[in-house]
Length: 208
Image 1 (cartoon, rainbow, N blue to C red):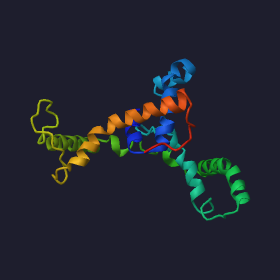
Image 2 (image 1 turned 30 degrees about the horizontal axis):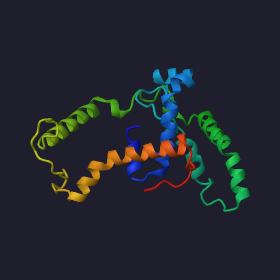
Image 3 (image 1 turned 180 degrees about the vertical axis):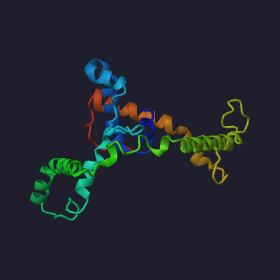
Image 4 (image 1 turned 180 degrees about the horizontal axis):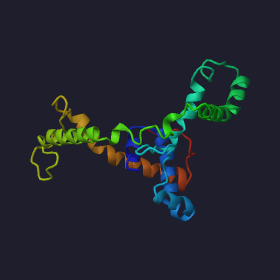
């Protein structure tokens, strides 16, 4: 929810509007849906479809394989612009995805989860772990040059681009400094006017 203030400031209206609702729902989960809350606390907010390690992903990403079925040859793209044809295609969307998965498994093509498949991805191998540690070390050394980790630094109040070493103009620096405060005020206004008092319709366009 920390990003909500920034969504509001930079006019990501859809994320701002529904992020408030999501935040309210999730903050009351322990009282409204205790079973779901307990599952989340146990770490059951990801999907794992194979026995490999280091491969749990968010549910929305796990559903992308369903979307893939609709975007390959014979899918929705380029099928037609007739509403009735699209409706028929959508009604069978999930079922065709299931058939694809079962057919793949039936012919032994889904080898990702067999005993012959590697037990883990390269991301958790010694070489990758070593490389990641070296990259983190290089990044820390780079940032240390600018005393970013020194809370008592007297480097001044200039905003510098680390890539080009250019100084940010005063207007850009000031805009970034007030972004969080401005976003917070917009969120408070949205909650008060559209949820608490309901003086303004929830779906009315947000002011920039």
